[in-house]
Image (tube, rainbow, N blue to C red):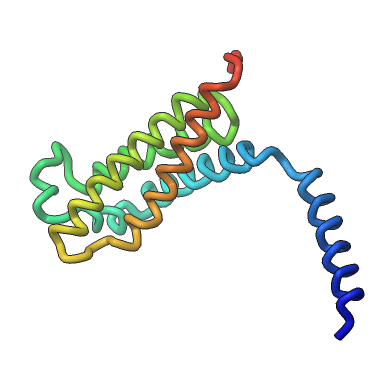
Length: 151
């Protein structure tokens, strides 16, 4: 077996990946843009298809809302489009990421209750949203560490 050739290829791959990483944007920029794009895309989809999103409102929650589940999703969609765009544009990032972090955390709490109460319902969405909530909190903390900028 040609271990010297393998070592040389591994070193070459490591050099190439280091070169790519050196030219890549800062990781928190990637995280911020990813979070903002996700919030924006979710908002757009809620505006285009609020009925699909209303499926996440379980029967025992619907009477507690002051509006119909579809209207609730439409209102959320408008807000998400605005906050997502602000996060992507790096304007009012602390506010936008704070809203996303609190909203996603509350969503995770709700989904955990539904998961337990409804025999595993929405477990896949809960698993995803836990990661997204963590991302939102990370973007919020980073935005609070940066010097204050005028938008």
